[in-house]
Length: 245
Image 1 (cartoon, rainbow, N blue to C red):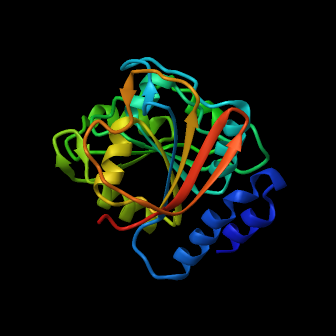
Image 2 (cartoon, rainbow, N blue to C red):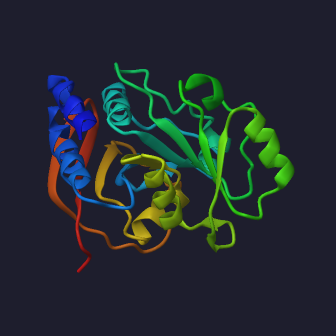
């Protein structure tokens, strides 16, 4: 909780609209829970696209929205993405547009396809943690562990899809109390479908893409106590995830 309160005190004036999220974090962590507080944050176009086509990266957010995203990263202990995001975008998963501490990179990678040249290995001040299935190749496990990557094996809920509840419980056991989830589409869909998101921060970019949708399947999840903030040309929508009707 002290970490959360320090995050609140350190927010610049232009980002004080994030206070309710951090207060939700603090309230959540007062209770005895077996999973982290989960914030889902990503950018999409007006038509709900997160990329123009599969396997092709696309910068949607403006500079001010990127600064907000990096402030959010600094307010969380860990940052989770799927391995497809690593393979497509090769993100650094660090904090560089604002002052703050890097979150722990967490990657869902059931078959251990994580590339040994990924930028996150050198860009983040913290070594990534990878979650794989029990059937992941042993030789790949040894190679990745030799790079300083910590590996966790959890069950699959279906072929190629890890049990997210097992992942969250493992993170909690390792002392992770706040987790930020950024993507990609399958990961966003899975967290919402399993009702594992506590708070959502969505950036809407004023453009149409007609590409890969963040939600490819029907998911009905309401946001409550919504707030709206314009950052440059983007619109940020944030709120607590409620109970579906």
